[in-house]
Image 1: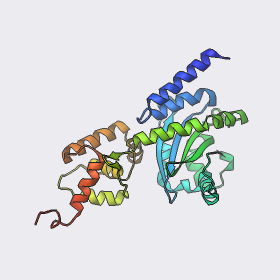
Image 2: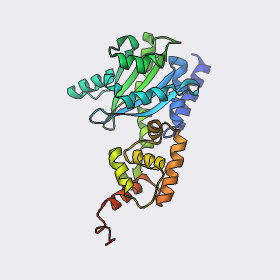
Image 3: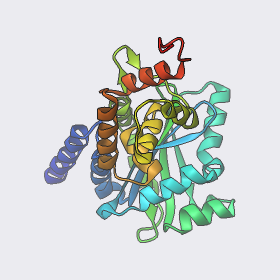
Length: 274
């Protein structure tokens, strides 16, 4: 038994647990997995009922922005529709199979030229292992990547990843639950970003364009990290903008924001203004 290595692994896992629910979760998870799997990046995707994707976590070695940049292309370009993960989700949903799955995708397996070039070649990716499961009613994938500097995963690497699949998905589930905005009475209802923007436009308080974007994505159910990915800003900046907007609106939570928007969406006569 390699006791120093075991102790280091346990300490790294403890740091992952400590960062559940905040922006340090992705980097901590990568730091735990990288020594054994020799991975360069980690991401997490969540899909809605129509298989629209939302990127909920990214991290790259050495703090580079590659995972964030590639995830932005993945989620914003529509290229994700060529991902093998979607076929797996459709097959499992059709069969009623909700058991977790390990899905591997190598660069050589990709037939669509744009998907391969813009998402893999551009960022030097050569192999991906994904833990896919239905978490809280949403298909969710936790993905680890190898780049060209290391090469493809060996069979033993895939076995190690599979051995940690249940733990990885449990950690991700807890992390996403901690990120999810909640109102006093439960989960905040989610609305489309376009609808949220229209609701925010009816508020009597003037928000900056960036504050409106952050609030709209918050109402759409995006986490702080997810808002940052969508807007290309740091999660800390999202927190600052959200706090500033809430202060202007004299509220304290996403639930209060939703209620305020609904109040001002009603006709003036119903609000007692006539």
